[in-house]
Image (cartoon, rainbow, N blue to C red):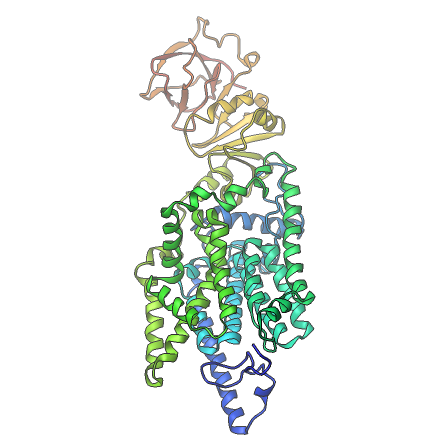
Length: 626
């Protein structure tokens, strides 16, 4: 663009110069008054829409963090909880689900640190996290408005704002405990201040761009890195025309500094985080190298049309609402007056999917990174459409567009939004498991949780720390090491057989509830459990063995067998070698594994049932139980 071209702050809808332009502050009194009234009306509309957007989300703030992707929400919450209790340490964010090595930095935990402010004021941590996220969502919306208004005018900005805050995806994720919208706020702050610097060359804009861009990169580098493109491809107000001038402008040291500092900050943090995670065998698989395939996906995935259809449908359903809006986006791009900027904007929206394909295929919440881009493109298209309408019908056309945009919230995507307004929604049943765990353990107990991936939800709501076992964690010697390290509680989510042999690392195993075990090196460690199993043959009373003439024999089968333990308890010893898959279930609690001997404390009659041990005979001997 030549130096004689119109300033970037011209409002393309009304022809008035924006308040940021030098010449826009000069004019007749009548024109100044009109401009002031227009600005006041604009601010009023923006405030009203923001108030509505916040008001319809506030009633959902007190839900547990379980309604959608609880693993990601409670991971964030656990780090914030550690900050509240032990002080903010950005370099050492703990997620106490990886054993004693719980210093697990993913992104810079700036969001978690900020959320401690409302939490320390007395708001519950769950609500504080949701409110913090909502604040950054609305900050993103306002910054989106500012960027689009600067480049394409009021109408496009207003349409972008509406598209962003009133889409199904925005409804759900704006009030979760997620870091995503702090990253988008930083990215849009970088773009806006960056193009202001390109136009006006004021150092404060460059400084703001560096800080905002660094925030985006440090908080979520997979989000921030792509928003460099709109800034680089933007054509400044005084930029000379011609291909060589275009290239030379983008090779200027100041331009590279504004880009390079945030990018360097993001990569340095990633390298540091990887070094910390690589230091523990339980977190080594979470380094960038270990997650390479998970993050980027494979070529075969990209060659599968069904995968693209899945991602595309998700974008359309959650961020657009209907396929017809794609046509509006294309119209906007074809008629955009700052095509370079909008092409960069479109690339910042599409390239994250292409690069991090598996992430977008597996998790819908990654759409947060591109949702401002989608909204901006919709706003641009809507503005171009309304420009073609006669002034008399432009307002009516705008109302129709808004109605069509909001319709999916109460129609096709209502099932996606509905759980927000339900008082309790826990599809993974994490809260009941947490309540069970809390009832049979203390805050000092170290806990092992099996078959729940590394979802922190159970430990977070039980207020416990421990190890979440995943398939890639299991390696020779792990369970012996856990036994030596003082892990005394085991919670099993799936009552399958795979976990049973792992319990043999502890000589004593006691059942405490339907899913929990008390584990110990000796009998004293499991005194709280009413039903015990042991491999410690020296602890078994001499008369409590399969060859003893005392006692009685019972045949264990799938049908329940009821008997009353002796006054000091009873021992059960198989008279033959149990089958490999043999399990003993007492009173419908968690099954005891295949062990040499079992003990039942004195008390009420118990129901005994064998699984995969049909016809097995047990010698029951009344003898003291430790």
